[in-house]
Length: 272
Image 1: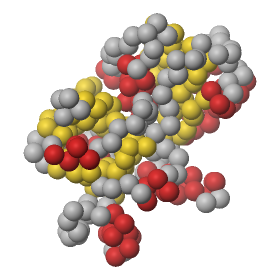
Image 2: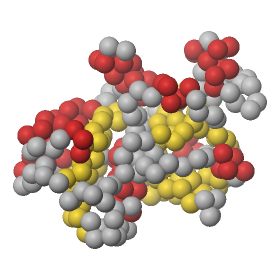
Image 3: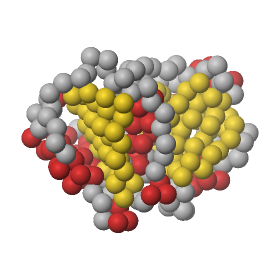
């Protein structure tokens, strides 16, 4: 499962490939693996001020020889599409230029998918490539309060946002995960009310949010996760008066689809 944002083809075209070395991996929860990377290539990573900063991780097709250094424009021009690297989108969990470290969290469900199994097996010293970062959200100091809603795919962005809240800022957070073992702890300078919702006991983030008492007045909201869930939450946000200019909302993934399949569906739905 990756956190795929809206179509960013124009931005993709102008980004250069960054190659990093794996420094270590950490098992954050039973199904969340953190890959911490660095090396000389990190000097090419230009951070932005977004807490949902995302990168496109490139997974080469086995047996295909790519130009070195990897040039995705050349690959798209000279290679058949079936030989292009597989692209998966992930939020940068943290970036520490002083320590020379960039961390990305991967959801891992056994041998399913591409990125999760890679994160579970990758070893220190191995390299990987990415494009980015992009992004569009960060907590605003002008907001009266903050609302953050999401599932596992949104956890890295929510964690980064909580760590960047203005001191004393109020935030209400609801996160849906598989079970209690998937909960995480976050440090924040804000005043945070955090609710965990567990699917294994029948919990539903949408149901919890519908029962919450709040209005859209003065709120800045971040709502991301599985597409069907986000669609329902979009209606709830509208009912509560959360205006578009105060709302960052997007489906990161769709149940039953790979990121490639979800990207095709979104393009078809948008007519592009």
